[in-house]
Image (cartoon, rainbow, N blue to C red; front, side, top):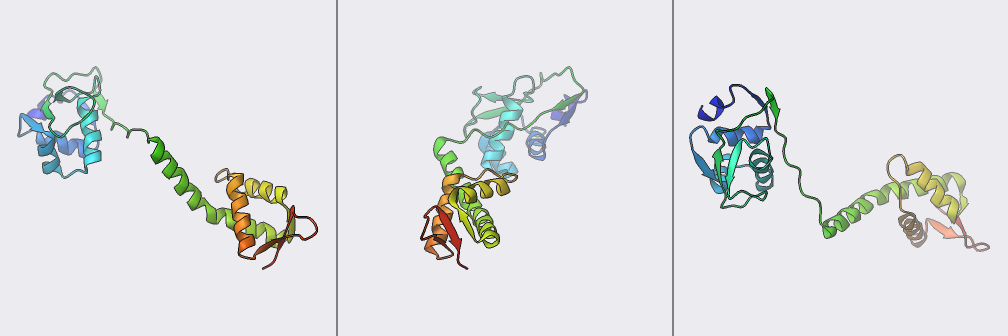
Length: 186
C-alpha cells in the first residue's frame, strides 16, 4: 500500500485503467511501459493516454516518467511520485484526449459519413416525389435540405447525385418539355 499512503490526504477521481496502473506501483518501485502493458493488458492506445494523464500533466503527475516528455514510448520507465501534493482534497485526473485526426483521416471520416447519409437522403427524395409526383430541381434540393436539417445539413451535390441515381434506376425521369422538372415513375 506504499502508493496509497501518499494519498491519505487526497481522494483521487480516476478511471479504472488508471487505478489498475497505480496498483502496480504498490509492489514495484519502477516499471517500464512494456511491463505495465503486460501486467494490465490495457489496449495500447488507452494505456498511452492513461500514462500521459498520470505522468505528463503538470500538477497531476502521480507518476514520474523517464525520459520526461509528453510522448509515451515503449522503453519509457515510470516511477511512483512520492512528492505528489495538491491543495485540493478531491483530485480529478482525467484521461488525455486522443490527438486530432490527420487530413487523410478527416477525408476518410467525411466519406464514411456521406456514405452513411445516402440512404436517408434517398428516402426523403422518394417521400417527396411520391407525394408531389412532379417537381423542379431546386425545389427537391430545398425540400431535402429542410427535412434533414434537424439531423444533418445535406450537401446539395450529394442530393443531386442521388437524384441522378434515381434517374438511372428509372424511378425518376426528366420532364420531356422542361428538363428542370423531374417526374416520379414508380
